[in-house]
Length: 99
Image (cartoon, rainbow, N blue to C red; front, side, top):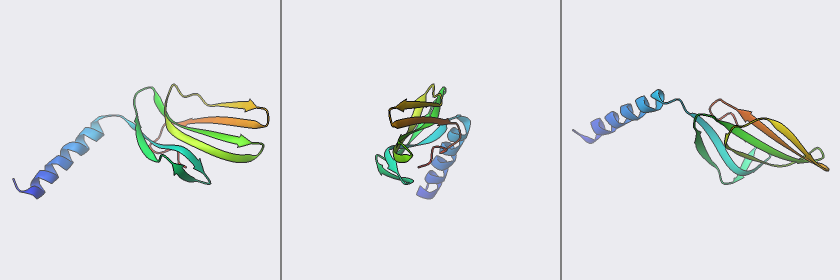
């Protein structure tokens, strides 16, 4: 087999495996602000029971930063701490937890 045929075969096999597995692709970022990831940008594959998650931290009305990840048993919630507020948002579509 020539190299082009090997690559084509590998691509077809890979795509069929991806289509046969139900998985959710999420953004990962340790620190984002102003819609830009400034630390630890990558992707994760959420398995069964996991969702994409965004945790946003605020001081008053000012957005401090957000974190993006895959999370097990994700349930949306608000957590007040004095003047600070933390929001946990969950979603289940590919790359739904955008920066």
